[in-house]
Image 1: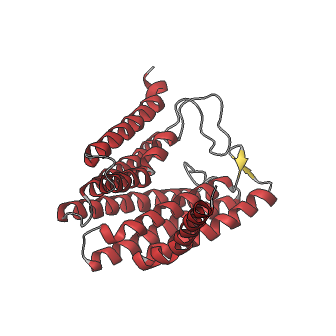
Image 2: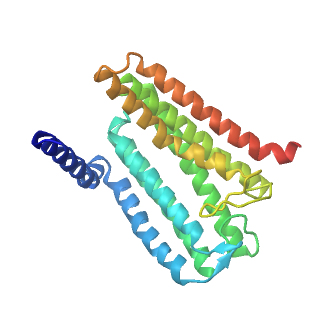
Length: 276
């Protein structure tokens, strides 16, 4: 490698590090409410990891602190993504701010309820053991349904108003928001069935999913469409600008179709034990 190559590699590394370190400041500028929600859950996640390490309490065969950890990570990722997308959601500043506060509040209730139940050594979901447990679970469900409807309305209004970004990126945001809502409401199936799994078999470590009849797989895939599809749209838009592809929207439609197919497959496999 010659001197110019060394300079090029060093410059590229420096640029990547700068972008990474600038990300928190960028997210704060885009949506401070959701930025602090994401940051708070990142801090909580660290605390829950300590709980995993030092607290031997077990709920449903796994550490009591595993579920709070997973939810804190998920909330952090969701709110950070929504904060990043905020400037591209063409709604009024007032609606954007009020919806951000509502989302932050709903997720605050959710994580506090989950962590509180873990601290009590009992499960947070599908728990009707006492009046208190029932009230906590019902409140969690109502809050998340309301938040999901709000997010759906946020994306519907933004889509109607049009996006001020490349059409491929706009399509990725629209498809990602739509599949996120689908995935979120798939979680309500678990509420109706009063269980997250109707199958049995080997349980995957870390996530705790079973390999058959587990609705959490489709739920997870749907929720993270909010990251995958806007990113696909952004990459496709950049690729067209760089002359590498000529039909970026078709690429996004393809990725979205494949992702929706994966979501449908996961949900079908979860339902299979019920219809067999």
